Length: 121
Image (cartoon, rainbow, N blue to C red; front, side):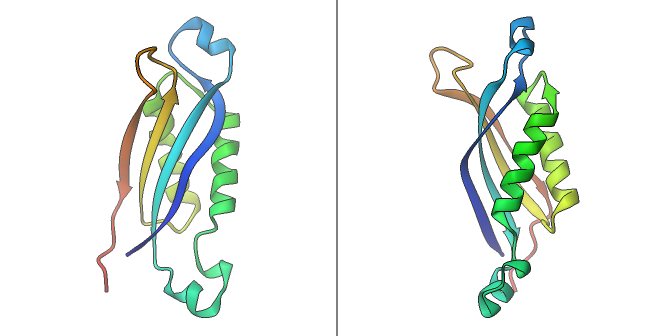
């Protein structure tokens, strides 16, 4: 199975457990691996036959704008659910980072995998 990649996608959202965090927007960085079979799209050079990473990236930005969560875990889980429901993605791996959340670390975050990874033909 092939994978479409979206790396270091930055979005701003309301995220955090502290009162002061609920009043500001913070940056999150996302990396995604999305399972798909790219052969039909490659054979016909047709965007309609593959995952449109621009449309997926736009959906993620919209998701970040319309939601406010306390936990990065909740953001990651709900985003994964939305992407699996709205796009023909059988499996995804999502890494979500919150830069600057812990002063001694570049970022904190979570990595999740959802869906079923199809067997290679």
